[in-house]
Image 1 (cartoon, rainbow, N blue to C red):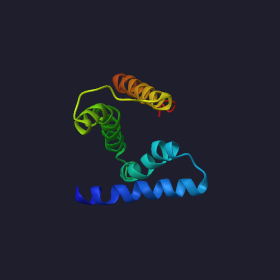
Image 2: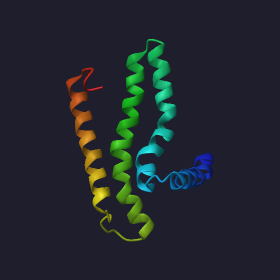
Image 3: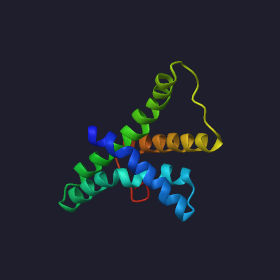
Image 4: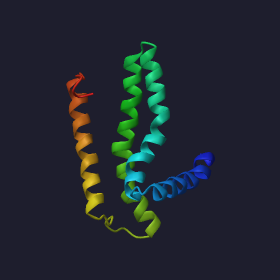
Length: 125
């Protein structure tokens, strides 16, 4: 846990600095590129498991990661905001953030539908 806290800020600052130099919007970097970097180990492990013929275990690893991301982490945002602000208040979101939140909710509903059907087609993947 200590290594995560020690490396999180330098990673984020480096990402924003590089994006600024390349002319990439800061929001796009944080919302889309950072998750790819932070989730790369999960994809690597799932890829290795699938390559070794353990596709079910690989899908389970990816699924548990997404369940965490789409439920616990999203649900924790307002709690972290309330605790850090010292009072309970609605989470202030601009239009872009609201759209991203709705996109995450839509992904959650899609994932729920896929899991409930107990099958995964090539199109759903």
